Figure 1: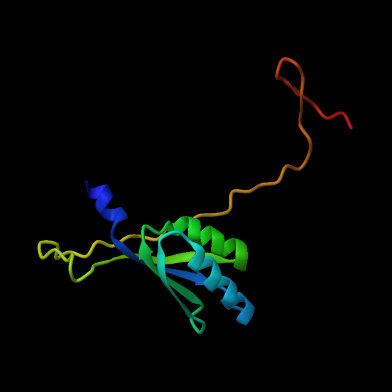
Figure 2: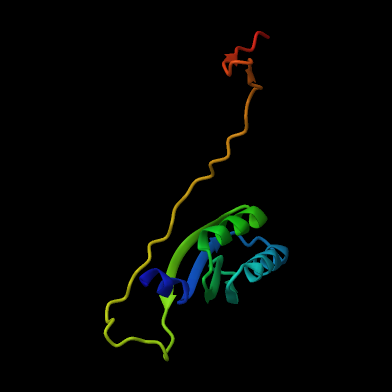
Amino acid sequence: MDGDRQVNTRQKIVFKVQIKSEKYKTKALKTAAKAKGVSNVSIEVEKGQVEVTGVGVDSVCLAKSLQKKLGYASIVSVEAKKDDKREDKKEDKKEEIKPIQWASTYFPCQFPVYYDSDGRIIPNLN
């Protein structure tokens, strides 16, 4: 039941991006606005931050999309925003969500690899 509750809560996600020009700012806005669950997008050009608010936003997927379009993007913070209507008085403690750090895992193959009919690797004899 607790997992269902996290999906339906509003989130405020802050991304650190490189905004070199007006073109990059437009790309960042369009990419963030297209993401599923996003209801509000704002950009602070001086700080190089994109602030996204929405319900059920996949922050890692959005960070990868921003990174693909802008060249660099990292998650600064993810916060659960409470609506005034849904605020529980029992929960006095603020639940802090730690940002996720990841590195690119794409490594292009340097040379072709050949297999024989038994599934063994055939060494490259060049």
